[in-house]
Length: 115
Image 1 (cartoon, rainbow, N blue to C red):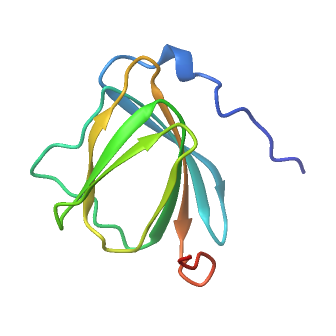
Image 2: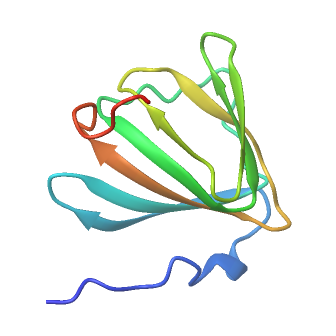
């Protein structure tokens, strides 16, 4: 069985200030595509996930804000590893072009080691 697709498919039809999550694969890890255009996480809300997350920005520009007051700017091609329970939120995503993210969720600490 082939698992195939295109990360850019449907990205052009995303509405302004919206976000969409598509699970591409689920097994030992979950791989998802996230489309966002001008979307931000509300200031009183945090992502506090049970699993580690490795995320790469394929298209666009974005900023992630962490509970320790660190802010990270991402441009197309940048990636970041976010350990489980590291509270964060999205503080900016571009709308022209919209953001296309590739995220891998799972128990990843043994896979990704810091350089």
